[in-house]
Image (tube, rainbow, N blue to C red):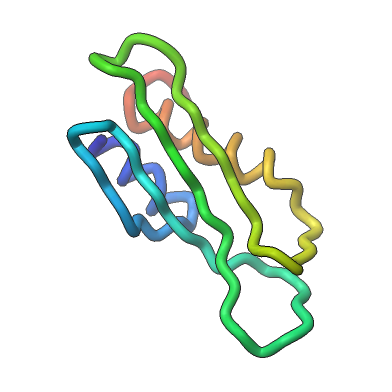
Length: 92
């Protein structure tokens, strides 16, 4: 979970909920988006790590309702996964 928290920070996400029991993290990011009102918007990043490091990492990026962005949500997810791999010593 420490690596996931570090990866979040390095990719512009702010962790909001962290559960060591379930290996779950919810983070938020204020993206460069076009909105129609003055209220605050944030994308959410949900990360589920496999038990004992075996299995697949699940990453879900959810944009706020009513927001459009030039960046597809998959790009945010891929950047996080790459940063996580680097934190775990598996990437460049």
